[in-house]
Image 1 (cartoon, rainbow, N blue to C red):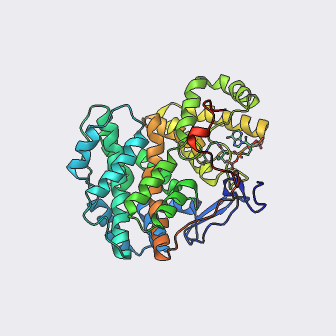
Image 2: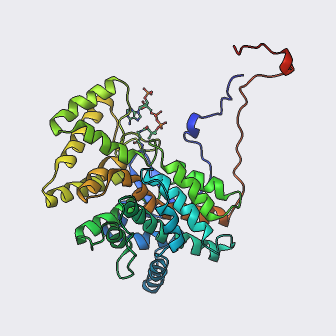
Length: 381
Ligand SMILES: CC(C)(COP(=O)(O)OP(=O)(O)OC[C@H]1O[C@@H](n2cnc3c(N)ncnc32)[C@H](O)[C@@H]1OP(=O)(O)O)[C@@H](O)C(=O)NCCC(=O)NCCS
Protein backbone atom coordinates (compact mmCIF):
# COMPACT_ATOMS: atom_id res chain seq x y z
CA UNK A 1 0.00 0.00 0.00
CA UNK A 2 1.43 3.42 -0.97
CA UNK A 3 2.10 6.07 1.68
CA UNK A 4 -0.40 8.92 2.04
CA UNK A 5 0.40 12.05 -0.02
CA UNK A 6 0.22 14.12 3.20
CA UNK A 7 2.94 12.05 4.85
CA UNK A 8 6.31 13.87 5.24
CA UNK A 9 9.39 11.73 5.92
CA UNK A 10 10.98 12.89 9.17
CA UNK A 11 7.93 15.16 9.70
CA UNK A 12 9.74 17.79 7.62
CA UNK A 13 8.01 21.19 7.88
CA UNK A 14 5.07 19.59 9.72
CA UNK A 15 3.75 21.97 12.39
CA UNK A 16 3.22 19.75 15.43
CA UNK A 17 2.25 22.37 17.99
CA UNK A 18 2.25 26.04 18.92
CA UNK A 19 4.79 27.61 21.26
CA UNK A 20 5.70 31.06 22.62
CA UNK A 21 9.25 29.99 23.49
CA UNK A 22 11.42 29.88 20.40
CA UNK A 23 11.29 31.17 16.84
CA UNK A 24 13.66 30.11 14.06
CA UNK A 25 13.84 31.92 10.74
CA UNK A 26 15.64 29.33 8.69
CA UNK A 27 16.01 31.52 5.59
CA UNK A 28 17.38 34.61 7.32
CA UNK A 29 19.33 32.61 9.92
CA UNK A 30 17.66 34.11 12.97
CA UNK A 31 17.03 32.48 16.33
CA UNK A 32 14.77 34.19 18.86
CA UNK A 33 13.87 33.24 22.45
CA UNK A 34 10.55 34.73 23.61
CA UNK A 35 11.02 37.74 21.32
CA UNK A 36 14.73 38.34 22.03
CA UNK A 37 17.32 37.71 19.33
CA UNK A 38 19.96 35.18 20.34
CA UNK A 39 22.71 37.62 19.35
CA UNK A 40 21.45 40.16 21.91
CA UNK A 41 21.05 37.52 24.60
CA UNK A 42 24.57 36.23 23.95
CA UNK A 43 25.90 39.78 24.28
CA UNK A 44 23.92 41.00 27.27
CA UNK A 45 22.23 38.16 29.19
CA UNK A 46 23.37 35.30 31.42
CA UNK A 47 22.32 31.66 31.35
CA UNK A 48 20.37 32.11 34.58
CA UNK A 49 18.42 35.05 33.15
CA UNK A 50 17.81 33.11 29.92
CA UNK A 51 16.31 30.21 31.87
CA UNK A 52 14.02 32.66 33.65
CA UNK A 53 13.03 34.09 30.27
CA UNK A 54 12.24 30.66 28.82
CA UNK A 55 10.09 29.69 31.83
CA UNK A 56 8.25 32.99 32.22
CA UNK A 57 8.38 34.31 28.64
CA UNK A 58 9.59 37.71 29.86
CA UNK A 59 12.81 39.09 31.32
CA UNK A 60 12.92 39.28 35.13
CA UNK A 61 13.19 42.46 37.19
CA UNK A 62 16.27 42.60 39.45
CA UNK A 63 14.64 41.05 42.55
CA UNK A 64 13.03 38.23 40.54
CA UNK A 65 16.38 37.30 39.01
CA UNK A 66 18.07 37.42 42.43
CA UNK A 67 15.53 35.02 43.89
CA UNK A 68 15.60 32.74 40.86
CA UNK A 69 19.40 32.59 40.91
CA UNK A 70 19.46 31.90 44.68
CA UNK A 71 17.01 29.04 44.21
CA UNK A 72 19.05 27.49 41.39
CA UNK A 73 22.17 27.72 43.57
CA UNK A 74 20.31 26.11 46.46
CA UNK A 75 19.43 23.14 44.25
CA UNK A 76 22.98 22.46 43.00
CA UNK A 77 23.97 19.71 45.45
CA UNK A 78 22.76 16.19 44.61
CA UNK A 79 21.97 13.35 47.05
CA UNK A 80 25.01 11.29 48.11
CA UNK A 81 23.11 8.15 47.04
CA UNK A 82 23.06 9.39 43.45
CA UNK A 83 26.84 9.88 43.44
CA UNK A 84 27.31 6.47 45.10
CA UNK A 85 25.26 4.77 42.37
CA UNK A 86 27.17 6.60 39.63
CA UNK A 87 30.40 5.29 41.18
CA UNK A 88 29.13 1.76 40.57
CA UNK A 89 28.65 2.24 36.81
CA UNK A 90 31.27 0.93 34.35
CA UNK A 91 33.78 3.76 33.79
CA UNK A 92 33.92 3.34 30.03
CA UNK A 93 30.24 3.98 29.23
CA UNK A 94 29.41 7.08 27.20
CA UNK A 95 28.90 10.12 29.45
CA UNK A 96 25.46 10.59 27.86
CA UNK A 97 24.50 7.10 29.06
CA UNK A 98 25.72 8.03 32.55
CA UNK A 99 23.74 11.29 32.41
CA UNK A 100 20.58 9.45 31.31
CA UNK A 101 20.92 7.17 34.34
CA UNK A 102 21.81 10.05 36.68
CA UNK A 103 18.73 12.11 35.77
CA UNK A 104 16.46 9.11 36.17
CA UNK A 105 18.07 8.46 39.58
CA UNK A 106 17.60 12.08 40.67
CA UNK A 107 13.88 11.53 40.18
CA UNK A 108 13.96 8.55 42.53
CA UNK A 109 15.50 10.68 45.28
CA UNK A 110 13.19 13.67 44.84
CA UNK A 111 10.19 13.25 47.17
CA UNK A 112 8.36 15.90 45.10
CA UNK A 113 8.91 14.13 41.77
CA UNK A 114 5.27 13.16 41.33
CA UNK A 115 3.80 16.46 42.58
CA UNK A 116 1.56 18.25 40.11
CA UNK A 117 0.65 21.89 39.46
CA UNK A 118 2.63 24.75 37.87
CA UNK A 119 4.45 25.68 41.12
CA UNK A 120 5.69 22.13 41.69
CA UNK A 121 6.59 21.73 38.01
CA UNK A 122 8.74 24.89 38.06
CA UNK A 123 10.57 23.69 41.18
CA UNK A 124 11.32 20.36 39.51
CA UNK A 125 12.47 22.14 36.37
CA UNK A 126 14.85 24.35 38.37
CA UNK A 127 16.25 21.34 40.25
CA UNK A 128 16.92 19.68 36.91
CA UNK A 129 18.69 22.74 35.50
CA UNK A 130 20.90 22.99 38.61
CA UNK A 131 21.58 19.27 39.02
CA UNK A 132 22.18 18.27 35.40
CA UNK A 133 25.34 20.38 35.63
CA UNK A 134 26.36 18.77 38.92
CA UNK A 135 25.94 15.16 37.77
CA UNK A 136 27.67 15.82 34.43
CA UNK A 137 30.74 17.25 36.16
CA UNK A 138 30.59 14.52 38.82
CA UNK A 139 30.61 11.76 36.19
CA UNK A 140 33.72 13.23 34.55
CA UNK A 141 35.52 13.06 37.92
CA UNK A 142 34.18 9.62 38.82
CA UNK A 143 35.21 8.00 35.55
CA UNK A 144 38.73 9.33 36.08
CA UNK A 145 38.82 7.77 39.56
CA UNK A 146 38.54 11.17 41.27
CA UNK A 147 36.09 12.38 43.91
CA UNK A 148 33.30 14.66 42.62
CA UNK A 149 33.80 18.32 43.52
CA UNK A 150 30.93 19.75 45.58
CA UNK A 151 29.19 22.75 43.99
CA UNK A 152 29.82 26.28 45.25
CA UNK A 153 27.08 28.85 45.69
CA UNK A 154 29.25 31.93 45.15
CA UNK A 155 29.84 31.21 41.45
CA UNK A 156 27.61 31.62 38.39
CA UNK A 157 26.09 28.49 36.85
CA UNK A 158 28.76 28.47 34.10
CA UNK A 159 31.73 29.17 36.40
CA UNK A 160 30.51 26.63 38.95
CA UNK A 161 30.23 23.93 36.30
CA UNK A 162 33.84 24.48 35.20
CA UNK A 163 34.88 24.57 38.85
CA UNK A 164 33.17 21.22 39.53
CA UNK A 165 34.76 19.77 36.39
CA UNK A 166 38.37 20.84 37.00
CA UNK A 167 38.44 21.44 40.77
CA UNK A 168 39.82 24.96 40.31
CA UNK A 169 38.13 28.29 39.66
CA UNK A 170 37.99 28.93 35.92
CA UNK A 171 39.68 31.69 33.97
CA UNK A 172 37.04 34.47 33.78
CA UNK A 173 37.11 34.43 29.97
CA UNK A 174 36.48 30.68 29.95
CA UNK A 175 33.56 31.17 32.33
CA UNK A 176 32.20 33.90 30.02
CA UNK A 177 32.53 31.73 26.89
CA UNK A 178 30.86 28.83 28.68
CA UNK A 179 28.01 31.05 29.83
CA UNK A 180 27.44 32.26 26.25
CA UNK A 181 27.60 28.67 24.95
CA UNK A 182 24.92 27.72 27.50
CA UNK A 183 22.70 30.59 26.28
CA UNK A 184 23.21 29.59 22.63
CA UNK A 185 22.27 25.94 23.18
CA UNK A 186 19.38 26.63 25.58
CA UNK A 187 16.48 26.13 23.18
CA UNK A 188 15.73 25.34 19.57
CA UNK A 189 11.99 24.89 19.06
CA UNK A 190 10.77 21.36 18.28
CA UNK A 191 14.14 19.66 17.78
CA UNK A 192 14.15 15.88 18.26
CA UNK A 193 14.98 15.85 21.98
CA UNK A 194 12.56 18.63 22.92
CA UNK A 195 9.82 16.94 20.92
CA UNK A 196 10.60 13.67 22.75
CA UNK A 197 10.29 15.48 26.07
CA UNK A 198 6.96 17.05 25.10
CA UNK A 199 5.55 13.78 23.75
CA UNK A 200 6.59 11.97 26.94
CA UNK A 201 5.25 14.52 29.42
CA UNK A 202 2.02 14.87 27.44
CA UNK A 203 1.03 11.45 28.84
CA UNK A 204 1.12 13.21 32.25
CA UNK A 205 4.07 11.17 33.43
CA UNK A 206 6.60 12.93 35.72
CA UNK A 207 9.14 15.50 34.49
CA UNK A 208 12.17 13.30 35.27
CA UNK A 209 10.79 10.66 32.89
CA UNK A 210 10.28 13.26 30.16
CA UNK A 211 13.81 14.63 30.54
CA UNK A 212 15.27 11.11 30.55
CA UNK A 213 13.58 10.53 27.18
CA UNK A 214 14.94 13.83 25.87
CA UNK A 215 18.49 12.90 26.92
CA UNK A 216 18.18 9.62 25.01
CA UNK A 217 17.23 11.55 21.86
CA UNK A 218 19.99 14.14 22.23
CA UNK A 219 22.63 11.40 22.47
CA UNK A 220 22.37 10.42 18.77
CA UNK A 221 24.97 11.65 16.24
CA UNK A 222 22.30 13.22 14.01
CA UNK A 223 21.34 15.49 16.92
CA UNK A 224 23.44 16.53 19.94
CA UNK A 225 26.05 13.83 19.35
CA UNK A 226 27.30 15.71 16.28
CA UNK A 227 29.59 18.07 18.25
CA UNK A 228 31.61 15.14 19.59
CA UNK A 229 31.86 13.63 16.11
CA UNK A 230 33.13 16.90 14.63
CA UNK A 231 36.07 16.84 17.02
CA UNK A 232 36.70 13.14 16.44
CA UNK A 233 36.80 13.89 12.70
CA UNK A 234 39.29 16.71 13.27
CA UNK A 235 41.47 14.45 15.41
CA UNK A 236 41.40 11.89 12.60
CA UNK A 237 42.33 14.55 10.02
CA UNK A 238 45.21 15.49 12.31
CA UNK A 239 46.75 18.45 10.42
CA UNK A 240 45.22 21.61 8.95
CA UNK A 241 46.77 21.08 5.51
CA UNK A 242 45.11 17.65 5.21
CA UNK A 243 41.61 18.98 5.95
CA UNK A 244 40.54 20.06 2.45
CA UNK A 245 41.49 16.80 0.79
CA UNK A 246 40.02 14.71 3.64
CA UNK A 247 36.67 16.50 3.36
CA UNK A 248 36.56 16.24 -0.45
CA UNK A 249 37.27 12.56 -0.16
CA UNK A 250 34.55 12.05 2.49
CA UNK A 251 31.99 13.91 0.36
CA UNK A 252 32.99 11.92 -2.74
CA UNK A 253 32.23 8.80 -0.71
CA UNK A 254 28.79 10.30 0.13
CA UNK A 255 29.67 10.48 3.82
CA UNK A 256 27.91 12.99 6.02
CA UNK A 257 30.21 15.63 7.49
CA UNK A 258 29.12 16.28 11.06
CA UNK A 259 28.41 19.87 12.03
CA UNK A 260 26.79 20.71 8.67
CA UNK A 261 23.26 20.82 7.38
CA UNK A 262 20.04 21.46 9.21
CA UNK A 263 16.39 20.64 8.86
CA UNK A 264 15.38 24.29 9.31
CA UNK A 265 18.33 26.59 8.47
CA UNK A 266 19.09 27.29 4.81
CA UNK A 267 22.03 29.51 5.77
CA UNK A 268 24.74 29.54 8.44
CA UNK A 269 23.31 28.84 11.87
CA UNK A 270 23.37 32.16 13.80
CA UNK A 271 24.84 30.35 16.80
CA UNK A 272 27.78 29.17 14.70
CA UNK A 273 28.90 32.80 14.05
CA UNK A 274 29.16 33.48 17.79
CA UNK A 275 30.82 30.15 18.60
CA UNK A 276 33.28 30.68 15.74
CA UNK A 277 34.32 34.05 17.11
CA UNK A 278 34.75 32.68 20.63
CA UNK A 279 36.66 29.60 19.46
CA UNK A 280 39.08 31.88 17.59
CA UNK A 281 39.60 34.14 20.59
CA UNK A 282 40.03 31.21 22.97
CA UNK A 283 42.60 29.70 20.60
CA UNK A 284 44.54 32.97 20.32
CA UNK A 285 44.59 33.40 24.10
CA UNK A 286 45.80 29.82 24.58
CA UNK A 287 48.35 30.02 21.73
CA UNK A 288 46.58 27.07 20.06
CA UNK A 289 44.51 28.00 17.02
CA UNK A 290 44.96 24.65 15.26
CA UNK A 291 41.41 23.34 15.80
CA UNK A 292 39.86 26.71 15.04
CA UNK A 293 41.80 27.04 11.79
CA UNK A 294 41.08 23.47 10.76
CA UNK A 295 37.37 24.05 11.41
CA UNK A 296 37.43 27.10 9.12
CA UNK A 297 39.06 25.09 6.32
CA UNK A 298 36.39 22.41 6.77
CA UNK A 299 33.64 25.06 6.67
CA UNK A 300 34.98 26.59 3.44
CA UNK A 301 35.45 23.19 1.79
CA UNK A 302 31.97 21.86 2.62
CA UNK A 303 30.38 25.12 1.43
CA UNK A 304 32.33 25.08 -1.84
CA UNK A 305 31.89 21.38 -2.57
CA UNK A 306 28.37 20.74 -1.29
CA UNK A 307 26.75 24.14 -0.65
CA UNK A 308 26.09 23.17 2.98
CA UNK A 309 26.35 25.61 5.91
CA UNK A 310 27.61 24.92 9.43
CA UNK A 311 25.22 24.27 12.30
CA UNK A 312 25.72 24.90 16.02
CA UNK A 313 27.91 21.82 16.43
CA UNK A 314 30.75 22.81 14.11
CA UNK A 315 32.66 25.33 16.25
CA UNK A 316 31.72 24.35 19.82
CA UNK A 317 34.28 21.52 19.83
CA UNK A 318 37.16 23.80 18.88
CA UNK A 319 36.20 26.06 21.81
CA UNK A 320 35.68 23.29 24.38
CA UNK A 321 38.90 21.50 23.40
CA UNK A 322 40.99 24.60 24.05
CA UNK A 323 39.27 24.84 27.45
CA UNK A 324 40.55 21.34 28.25
CA UNK A 325 37.18 19.58 28.06
CA UNK A 326 37.14 15.91 26.97
CA UNK A 327 35.63 15.28 23.51
CA UNK A 328 32.96 12.84 24.67
CA UNK A 329 31.73 15.39 27.21
CA UNK A 330 30.55 17.81 24.52
CA UNK A 331 27.10 16.27 24.17
CA UNK A 332 26.43 16.12 27.94
CA UNK A 333 27.45 19.79 28.00
CA UNK A 334 24.82 20.42 25.32
CA UNK A 335 22.36 18.78 27.75
CA UNK A 336 23.59 20.98 30.64
CA UNK A 337 22.27 23.88 28.57
CA UNK A 338 19.31 22.29 26.72
CA UNK A 339 17.79 21.11 30.00
CA UNK A 340 16.50 24.69 30.22
CA UNK A 341 14.69 24.45 26.87
CA UNK A 342 13.43 20.94 27.57
CA UNK A 343 11.92 21.98 30.88
CA UNK A 344 10.51 25.23 29.42
CA UNK A 345 8.71 23.20 26.75
CA UNK A 346 7.57 20.66 29.32
CA UNK A 347 6.09 23.49 31.43
CA UNK A 348 4.38 24.90 28.34
CA UNK A 349 3.04 21.47 27.38
CA UNK A 350 1.71 20.82 30.88
CA UNK A 351 0.09 24.27 30.91
CA UNK A 352 -2.14 23.36 27.95
CA UNK A 353 -1.89 19.62 27.60
CA UNK A 354 -3.33 17.18 25.13
CA UNK A 355 -1.76 13.76 24.61
CA UNK A 356 0.37 13.69 21.43
CA UNK A 357 -0.73 10.74 19.37
CA UNK A 358 -0.30 10.98 15.60
CA UNK A 359 -1.22 8.30 13.09
CA UNK A 360 0.86 6.09 10.82
CA UNK A 361 -0.22 5.30 7.28
CA UNK A 362 -0.37 1.50 7.20
CA UNK A 363 1.81 0.13 4.36
CA UNK A 364 1.96 -3.55 5.37
CA UNK A 365 0.18 -6.68 4.14
CA UNK A 366 -3.58 -7.13 4.43
CA UNK A 367 -6.14 -9.89 4.73
CA UNK A 368 -3.66 -12.77 5.08
CA UNK A 369 -5.03 -16.18 6.03
CA UNK A 370 -3.58 -17.43 9.32
CA UNK A 371 -1.58 -20.69 8.91
CA UNK A 372 -1.20 -22.86 12.06
CA UNK A 373 2.44 -23.30 13.16
CA UNK A 374 2.51 -27.00 12.35
CA UNK A 375 1.40 -26.32 8.75
CA UNK A 376 4.15 -23.71 8.02
CA UNK A 377 7.32 -24.64 6.07
CA UNK A 378 10.21 -25.90 8.19
CA UNK A 379 12.66 -23.43 6.57
CA UNK A 380 12.09 -19.66 6.68
CA UNK A 381 12.22 -18.20 3.18
C1 LIG B 1 20.99 17.83 10.51
C2 LIG B 1 20.53 16.73 9.58
C3 LIG B 1 20.23 15.46 10.40
C4 LIG B 1 19.26 17.19 8.87
O1 LIG B 1 18.74 16.10 8.20
P1 LIG B 1 17.61 16.21 7.07
O2 LIG B 1 16.85 17.48 7.22
O3 LIG B 1 16.85 14.94 7.13
O4 LIG B 1 18.43 16.36 5.72
P2 LIG B 1 19.02 15.17 4.88
O5 LIG B 1 19.87 14.28 5.73
O6 LIG B 1 17.89 14.54 4.14
O7 LIG B 1 19.95 15.99 3.88
C5 LIG B 1 19.53 16.55 2.62
C6 LIG B 1 20.66 16.36 1.62
O8 LIG B 1 21.85 17.04 2.08
C7 LIG B 1 22.88 16.12 2.34
N1 LIG B 1 23.48 16.45 3.63
C8 LIG B 1 22.83 16.94 4.71
N2 LIG B 1 23.68 17.11 5.72
C9 LIG B 1 24.89 16.72 5.26
C10 LIG B 1 26.16 16.66 5.84
N3 LIG B 1 26.34 17.05 7.11
N4 LIG B 1 27.19 16.21 5.10
C11 LIG B 1 27.01 15.83 3.81
N5 LIG B 1 25.80 15.86 3.20
C12 LIG B 1 24.76 16.29 3.92
C13 LIG B 1 22.21 14.75 2.43
O9 LIG B 1 23.10 13.71 2.11
C14 LIG B 1 21.09 14.91 1.45
O10 LIG B 1 21.64 14.81 0.15
P3 LIG B 1 20.85 14.01 -0.99
O11 LIG B 1 19.58 14.77 -1.19
O12 LIG B 1 21.80 14.06 -2.14
O13 LIG B 1 20.62 12.65 -0.44
C15 LIG B 1 21.60 16.45 8.51
O14 LIG B 1 21.94 17.65 7.86
C16 LIG B 1 22.84 15.79 9.09
O15 LIG B 1 22.87 14.56 9.22
N6 LIG B 1 23.88 16.59 9.48
C17 LIG B 1 25.05 16.05 10.11
C18 LIG B 1 24.77 15.82 11.59
C19 LIG B 1 24.72 17.10 12.37
O16 LIG B 1 25.59 17.95 12.25
N7 LIG B 1 23.70 17.19 13.23
C20 LIG B 1 23.53 18.33 14.09
C21 LIG B 1 22.31 19.07 13.75
S1 LIG B 1 22.20 20.58 14.70
